[in-house]
Length: 120
Image (cartoon, rainbow, N blue to C red; front, side, top):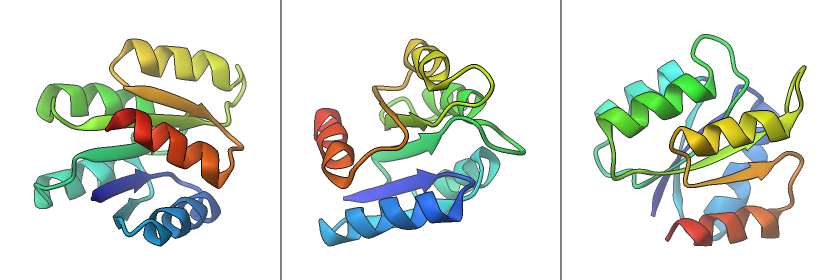
């Protein structure tokens, strides 16, 4: 399966990508929502997006809202380590705005894969 991973932290993207590739997924990477949405325009066969919430340029909440509008069939896993208000608040908002499931950072490989299975 093709999966787009959007996160501004290169270490987090590498961690997620490594786990997904071990499960034979094809992974596309973006460092913010703007780049992620551009990739979705270019690649029409991405059924799942894993997106961080707190990012520069275009943050995750805005990205989720645009994906829900432009690509309603895409399944979204929102991830967040929080920020000033803590991850729970961001993830509740992401869920309310269209994320199909959420995952609080830090998370393990098995937790990521379980969350991904919930999308299928």
